[in-house]
Image (cartoon, rainbow, N blue to C red; front, side, top):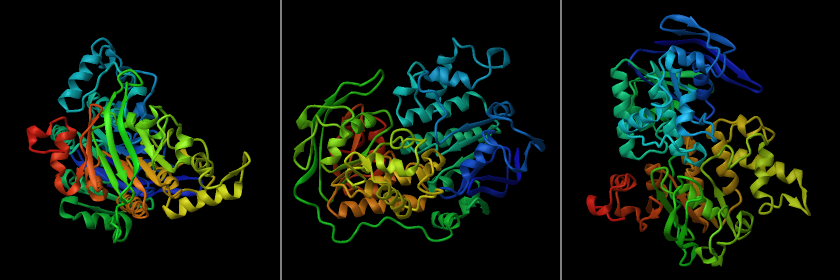
Length: 508
């Protein structure tokens, strides 16, 4: 169906794709693997017409094509689910989907019928969406559903999926895989990008592996182990997160949340209902939940972007419920929100200034209102080096980094401040296996030094790897945290899907 021959694409200071060739057959589910910065995103943007190659050829069903833009790719039958969403926040779900569809006279949907069709398709594939909701009010996971449903409505011949399961429960992943297999059986080819290597083995029949912008291997992932795939990606055995020996939990709570209730802050938002938990020094508390169940609202309340009554949040015994983000940082807390491009970082600002945004006082980067440029630059450089961020330097704009590298910078900036309390949402979203393990080890090391850590994640494997206790968010409520050893991934997955413990035998 699609063949790439000798694709090359260079940007200032880096060759993203270097003589890349691959072919995707009809009805094939084909994986594209590589660590962050390997060139995957650049390659799929070329296939989708977002970028044009400097050299090389694209053949569609045996004929050379020159894709002038995404609309030309869609006309051929190519659909794409981006890792960084291509949505207009001020428009509704239905309006965003309509923009990518042909008009009724060209085989598209009638505007009046589109909301019903969206509801039908989203329900059919287990990706619930309300067509009337404004994108601005949606969580990251719900925005991802829009991208998937929008592609499915176009009846694609080739579907490109970039990290589609990062915010899904195990049960939802299973339903998505059923959908993808059905699409493949109907003749649709799928190019699938994921850092979850077991997913690749379960779903894909061919894998092309990139390293440093070049193809280093093509294989049948079903015949490989997770370890061998990881080795091909990074050229060495990746790290596995290990809990530091001798870690002792402190007796006192460093973070306490008591009876936190908040009305929905925007239309279709989720109200928080009597949320209570505590985290001791040295402890990692994992909060699981399907996107849209109150995680962003809880995060903004913990950061201080939405204020509560004073005693609702305490940091090291100090009531901070009425204090904003800066005062909470002064009290010893750091935060990593889930949306790295726009919330955690300012996309157009260089990395040096993005480091300054949250670390100015804690790291002594300013004095008397003046920026200490040497200290600022040194701090950003240390984060880049410690967390292996692939960037052209501290002057690189945040938006110029790949998703995984920007995530590493955002997480590293906060951990490098050595906070007493760290709250982090989706710490390894879009990060390759080796980098994910490094981030998880850094979180565990911070906890071992006495910090209290809260990790909000839809990745249950991640939570079971690093958390001491786990709780589930559902419809704005938080279950009672329980030790990791007393629950299973399947039980937590069912609770995330809205099935309560008394129905499953799981008590959380």
